[in-house]
Image (tube, rainbow, N blue to C red; front, side):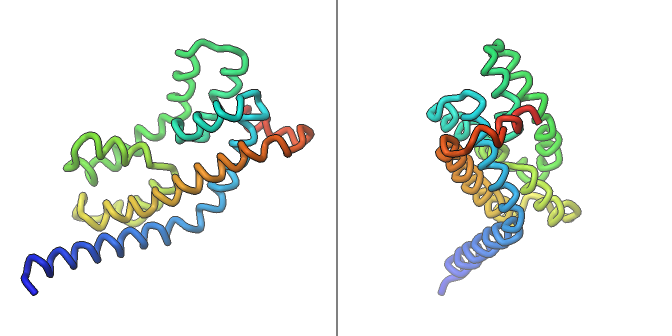
Length: 184
C-alpha cells in the first residue's frame, strides 16, 4: 500500500468518524426539533397558508422562528419588506453564530460557507461550539465533518416533521389553536 493510498484511507475514516460523532451528539436534540417542526407545519396551514405555500416556505426558509414570524404578516397582507425585515430581526442570532464559526470555515470557498451557514441551527451551533469552542486549531477536517454530521440530521428532521405537520394540519382540530404558535 502506498503512502498516498494510506493517507486517503485515513482521511476517509476521519471524515466518517467525525460525521457520525456529530450525528450521535445531536441525536437527543432532534426530539425537540421534531416537535417544533410538526407544530410549525400545522401552524402555517392553520394560520391561512395553503399547503403548497407552506411546503415551499418550509423548504426555502429553514428557520422556524422566521416562518412563524412571517405567517401573521402574510395573512394580513403586510408589505414584503416588512415580512423580510421581521424575519431578519428574529434571526439576528445567526449573525453571531456566523461570527463565532468564521475561524473554523474561513478557509473554504464562499459558496460552501454559505451552504454551511444555511444548514446551521441553534442546537448544532451549541453542540459544535461545546465540542470545539476552545480548540487550539480551528478549521480542520474533523471539525468540518462533525458539523456536517450534526446539521444534516437536523435538516432532515426539520423538513420531514414540518412537512408532516403541514400534511396533518387538516386533521388537527381548530380547537387546539396551534396557529397561536405563530404569535409565540
